[in-house]
Length: 248
Image (cartoon, rainbow, N blue to C red; front, side, top):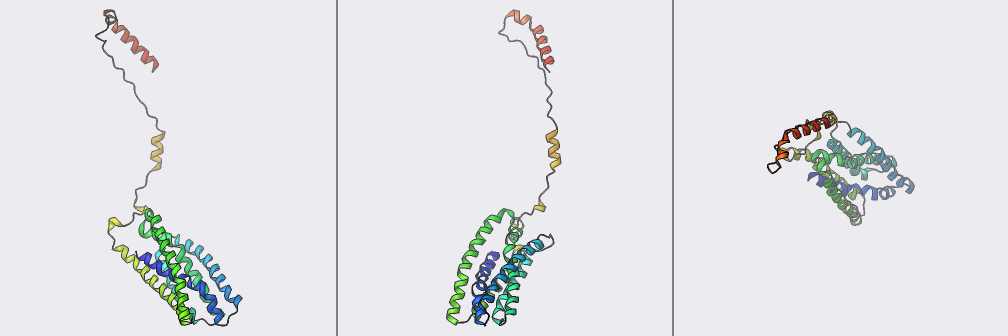
């Protein structure tokens, strides 16, 4: 639940820099082409950051949720500090930190869900989370635009986006505490807790042939038979036994 709330507020503030960063930089006297290149910087650092975060999160001793929370803290500081940037160098630094931070926030989602809920609940949880993210993303940018129209300043929309990231960070830090409060039977079963199956034993069992020992049972002659057949029964039985032995 807390992860869902965290993602709602995080996505509400995520697209504010993408939509209004260029206009804010132009109002500070930066050329249009240079201001537009800030989005390219965010995209490049985001691409590199996703690969780096995925590589780091692959180590077993790395806490993916903690790494995600660190990225949220950096995103909060970068977005909230945007109104304080008045030079092109300051905008570049902000763009680099923001691009790297949101890469971990986006790419670690599935890993965090598996750690908290288990692999069997990943599909349902991820689908609901994407639904919440989409709804928040639709609301976030228009809300920031409405605030700009009311205040005629880009500072307040960026502060608002920073506040959204701050709420997302706080709720995400609270998720491990809530996980410890869950009953043991409700916690996800990790693969390490399952008993491994020895495949070699199964292969040996399959290779061993199944042998069946035939058992010969002598039957009594039918009482409805003819006397001649009754008298010849011992000979016929012996003959049948010999035939069965020859077949075996």
